[in-house]
Image 1 (spheres, rainbow, N blue to C red):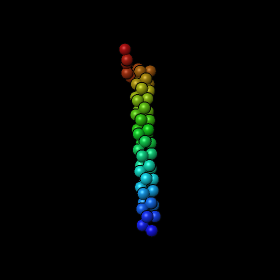
Image 2 (cartoon, rainbow, N blue to C red):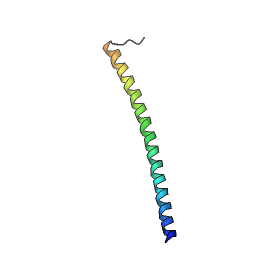
Image 3 (spheres, one colour):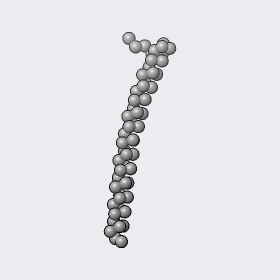
Image 4 (cartoon, rainbow, N blue to C red):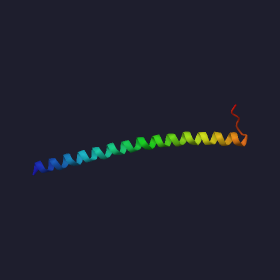
Length: 58
């Protein structure tokens, strides 16, 4: 019986590790996407300001 419990605990530990690893990868992907969107937003805000004459870029 102890052997079966050890197998279950090991299996659950491995599954938990894999879930944490997948979540870590997804968090990194989302952070990169947020960074890209912020850069795009800055670009568009500057472009809009230039078009409206608020900001001048030589």
